[in-house]
Every structure is written in structure tokens, then in C-alpha cells.
Length: 254
Ligand SMILES: CC(=O)[C@@H](O)[C@H](O)COP(=O)(O)O
Ligand SMILES: NCC(=O)COP(=O)(O)O
Image (cartoon, rainbow, N blue to C red; front, side, top):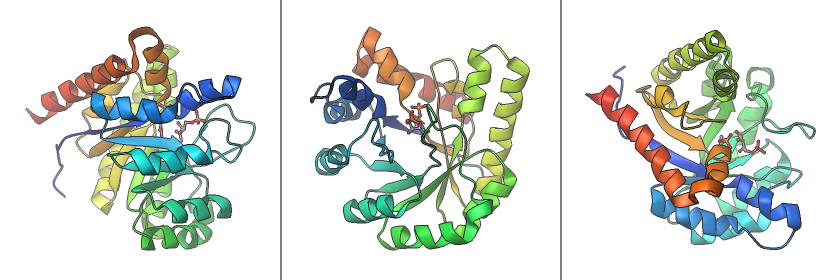
């Protein structure tokens, strides 16, 4: 199959604007305002994860995003009946199914699709029927990618957390191994007909190698950008990420 080197979309995840808001209750900082700034700064989409415990994004945030966004919403959620009903009510552009554990600090790994194939196939069917693009958040693992394909997902998002952690902890052999796994699995998934996204933990230092993978169509980035916004403002923080992605992509295309 031909390897595309098209534009790379940036999805800005605004979860952690809500984390700061929720630290004090009340309405500020407002994730919807962050989404509007992200659009202006060059985000191609907004990502928001409505966790079952509502630790950051709230139901009202999702409702508000559906009303105000001019770019597609990538709605991240666990595969539960409650979340499915919410997704079917709002019909966002994309629904990304992610694993969730109550006690985890952040999404620790990818979804175990292979172990739950039958249930997940039934779970995503109504979402697809409602017109949502269904994405599955998984590790760079052939078995999981094949299972995601079999259940009828249109998109996979590869979990880049292990790659980013290894880089920032100076474990460079591990980092290179994780990067190579994502590179190979991007090609593998693309050849199966899946659209490939990557996300979790990406920073200015880790984004470029991933942005060069020709099959990767979208990066979803949140926590680092919201942190960086404290120092340089949200708009410049996003523009810098956009610049790095585009620079890496142009070098690949040349
Ligand atoms: C699914 C995922 O990768 C997460 O990045 C998430 O969307 C951010 O929220 P948490 O930090 O709560 O995991
Ligand atoms: N799906 C990953 C995502 O949306 C952003 O993850 P992070 O940059 O907040 O770790």
C-alpha cells in the first residue's frame, strides 16, 4: 500500500485545563476558552476525555464543546454503557475508546482489545452507525491492532507514553525500541486500512520523530501543552508544537 505523507493533524487535549479548574471548583480556567484559543493557534481538533470519575472534564464541558467547536471533537471514553449513551446523545466526530482504572494517575496502557473482541465489536457498532469515527487507544502491538481491525474500528491511536517516559528518564535504548515499535506498527495498521494516530505524553522533545512516520495522520497532545501554557501562554505553546510537527513532516516529504 502507498505510504502517505499528507499533512499531520494536531488534536489539542484540554483535559488538564479542567484539572486546574476542578482543584478549586468554580468555573475557571474554562476548558471551552482553551478550546477556542487552540482553534485559533492551529489545532485541527480538540480532544477531551470524560473519565468515569469526572476528575477533569465534566458532562457540561462535553455539552459545551459540542455547541461551540468549529473543529472536530475527539471524545475519549471508557467502554461502558454510561459513556456509550453520552456519545450517542452528542454524536461527536470521533470516539476514542480508552482503558480506565480508578486508581491510575493517567492512562497507563492501551486497551486490551484482543481479550474483549466480541464485547467491543458490539459496543462500537452503534457508535459507527451514529456516524462517529471509532478510534481505539492501544499499545504498538500487532495482536491488538489486528483485533481493533476485526472489531470494525476505523482508527487506532498508538499510546506513546512508554516512548516519552523513556526519553525523559534518559533510558535511550528503551526509547528507541518503543519508537521503532510505533514506526513498524503504524505501517502495519495502515496496511490493514486503519487510520493511525499517536498520543500521550508527547512534548517538544519527543514530537518530531513521531511526526516523521508517514502513516500517522494525527497527534493528540494535552498535558505538556497545558503545562507549557503556564510559562508562555496557550496560543504560543500550541503554535510551537505545530511548528515542530510541520518542520518534521516537511523534512519527511522532501
Ligand atoms: C487517553 C489518554 O491518553 C489520556 O491522555 C487522557 O486523555 C488524558 O487524561 P488523563 O491524564 O486523565 O489520562
Ligand atoms: N490521547 C492522548 C491525548 O489526548 C493527550 O495525552 P497527553 O498529552 O495529555 O498525555
